[in-house]
Image 1 (tube, rainbow, N blue to C red):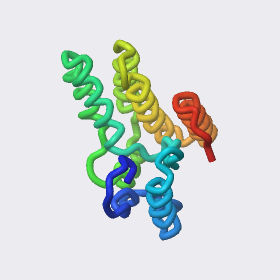
Image 2 (spheres, one colour):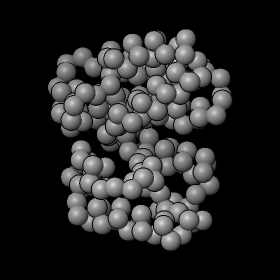
Image 3 (cartoon, one colour):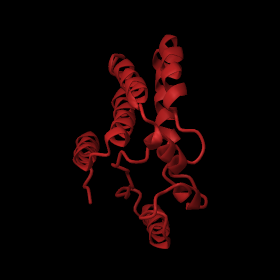
Image 4 (cartoon, helix red, strand yellow):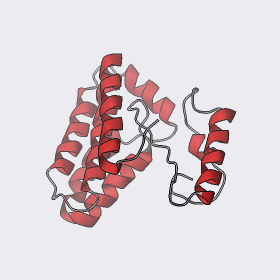
Length: 171
């Protein structure tokens, strides 16, 4: 659904947190699809802004971008992602990560991945890949400190970034 494809929207909510994995959100996604089918020039999109849960799609988007634009850097990126890419169910990864006594290596790998993407040529797709890398860095930084003010600041920046990129109206 997020990519405009038909199908059951339930998988989109499979590992969503408790405020999102509800019948009401499922109904919202279903309504959005219906609305967009009848309003092709005024589509509604659902964009996440939180850094609390970063899905594998963010890692995949960066990997695809780097592989397409600078394949000679793909191995370096993968070395960082091999350490930080969540495997399995995301809530379990978060619980595991929060329980670690030393989280700095994960923050460092996320920062190095961000710096790698930031240093690439600004070709088509760079802004989105860089934003994904920023959100991944925010994820590890937030869960290392659990400072709500940091999380809120990052969410605000993410919303403004999306607004500036797309010019879309935001609710």
